[in-house]
Amino acid sequence: MPILIFSVAPLLQGIYLGFTDYELGNSVTTFVWFDNFRFLLTDYLFWQSFRIGAIWTVLVTVGEVVLGFILASLLNARLPGQTLARVLVLAPWAIPPVIKGLMWRLIYHPEAGLLNTTLQQLGVLSQPVNWLNSFVWALPAVILVGIWSSLPTTTIVLLAGLQSIPQELREAAAIDGAASRAQFRNVTLPLMKPVLISISALQFMWNFNSFGLVFVLTEGGPSGSTRLPMLFAYEEAFQFGNLAYASALGTAMTLVVGIVLVLYLRSQYSSDGGA
Image (cartoon, rainbow, N blue to C red; front, side):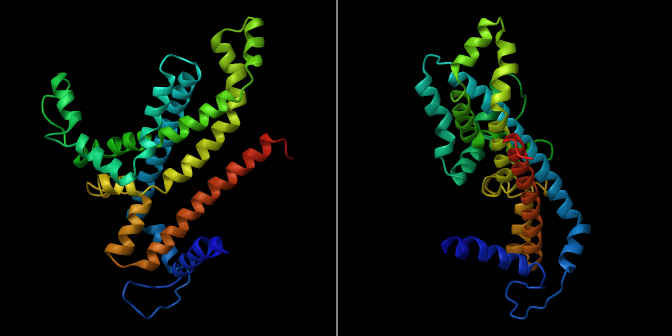
């Protein structure tokens, strides 16, 4: 019952509003059928935000999975200081998104930020760069923060997957003369494939729906260069009062996430040997 009240009901209400002309403060609502969705298909700003969202989602997901796999492999190698390393890897996970955003805004600060100060001291920069207000650097800057923010969850999941691989398989491969690279290609990677697919699909869905971190960092600027789809929907709803159009945007994004979820479930079903 709580799931029905707090999850399904708001979802259905949002879908319904997408078929109306409801505006903030307007008590009269008319059913307009697919008008909002037809406008969405021709809305340049929506497709711009969708393109930016796709770039953000793919690069953050790929970055965190690749780096997470490397970190998980290092943590699984039983190197000295492993306990401390695990604590440091988990540190970003314990920080609320708003605090993460504020912290990185300070790091990216053009005058007093740690990044500019360090790069200038190393001679990499001759003058400060306004990272979060640059058309060139704003999106790469928030993508870097996105990877750092999501890395702990991915690393821990992949580490659990690596630790579930029986050591006997690696030992058998080593006895057969397989080098470390061959062991990774023929033993580790095939057994880790279901875990990699799972965490990639889940992170893709979470990253596509990102809002808080990027909102704190740039609020979608400069001039929409970091405006993710969720930020675009937020602006339409609460800055311009177009709740009906924002609901249509939300429905479209839910559809995208649903497609990814179906593909993920199909891959899982296939890997389990289903017909």
